[in-house]
Length: 260
Image (cartoon, rainbow, N blue to C red; front, side):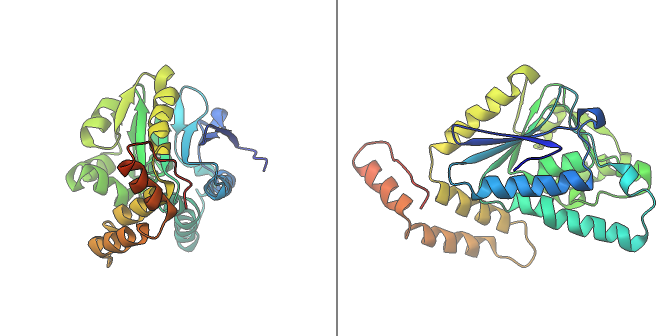
């Protein structure tokens, strides 16, 4: 599939999505959100892809926000619909993908850009990265899950401060807050991220997908995460990967998983 605003590569089980709108600092518009949905869906359905890495083109920005020109004159109903559709199509979709998704944050991740990074399963930042949710400075609030995921990651108080001040934090602060897992020089970002992806690939894809479900369940209203863990733990016992993993352990060899 050809994309106007994305570049997709696939190597050694790692699918990479690069948002390619450098003249707009890779800002998210409606077309790019739809393309991202299609790209994630295609990679998730490809059995050869074990990990997805998403990053931005250039050295300035991961995603510097949403394309404000598209919604500056929206009505109340249109604004609510924009948020609902975006969350369903991309942000919630990414969070619940069965394939692990790592955000390689290579610069500014603001507004919808930070919301996209937070929807990924975890984040790695370059040392020049800056992150924030500046929406209140425009008279609006984060609409793609930012008011929900940021407190989950950094705590209520820090999230309140970041959102209310509309300020940015640097990469080291983001790491101290728990917003990103690692900070590395920009030139090393993709290599470092793919190094972690390679470690993930060694393990059972089917077990990882069930772990994602169990971990996410703890953050969903009305869902008992412990029950979700128990069910998915049990389901693992019926997989070929479980049989291979336990057999390989007992035979003192490395397991070769087929993701079934």
